[in-house]
Image (tube, rainbow, N blue to C red; front, side, top):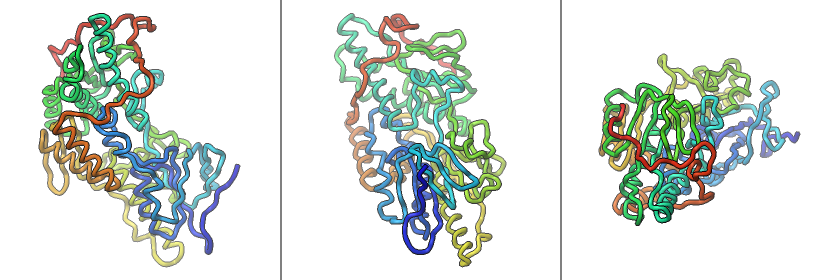
Length: 460
């Protein structure tokens, strides 16, 4: 295998390898770009993605370019940073080397692993093709294809036969992603496409959230959970809690012995940490997240830092959630910590001054639909908001955190246009024109019934 060493000339500088160009990795590289170290950032994609807005790409409000930025563009002002479009597949922790998929080995003095998480189908990986989750741009465009195609196929079949399958959309999982997808599907069906079809009524589409636990949005206070259910009901979204999905098939899902027909099934029920955590040989939790100490290090490895979803970090007796805020703060902390360690090694500073990482919780927000959201505010004051005030707060905060002025301007313009005109600018269907379970001859399904989903007695 080829071994890549530090770039640059002159005195040998410390080498830092960062795996992952998400929130943790990009915030780490921003801090390290100002330090006398050589940095190599590795990601299998060439772009940084603002994941909190990914569902808006999935539901045709925004285009992928509005929430993504080339990694090389972000680091162009840091000459000590190299970018490799590659993928880590293993480690030699004793020799301090990272094995890449292309066969290259990267040597490091310090390693930051911020490769995030992926979908968890709880051992039923065959469900992935039938119920896509939402983590990448590819996931978002596939969900967009399926949702928009369902309406197009219904229109075509209505013209050909005078009937069509019920437009039932089922989301498995009642966390923030599930709630956001459900509200957005309802919005585009009722508001943005209501007058675009001649033979079907998109507003008759039914959206159902299936949540296995007793509540949706479990990370939120009880009052906001109830507000979310009320706002979803106003959008026509049905919520069923205590609904454990036992099977997913083309065109339907099973909850126990009950069959629920679905033209589109989406997955928002669970995540698991990147497999790189276990490859480090460190202790992990049941999700595969690496258990770290106060400096974000696996025990016994002060040269390795774990950030974001991949880190199991506990504060005040509770695990810090795997969302954007902690990942950003962890990346920034890791960069500062490495800076102090490098300074200490050169005799110009002492790492003993370093405080342990502490997550500063500013609150959580989840959007539900147009003018509908819930927000738990922790800073600069404590408050629980819902409805339009929460939605406006969510909008401003998310635009503020978008990287790059062009992205902020594009998103604001698109949102304003969508809000005022009820027109979407990204309703593009690409790829296959088939949906699992739509055709009568597909295995396991037969003809989907035209009877709408029973919404008369929602269980919340």
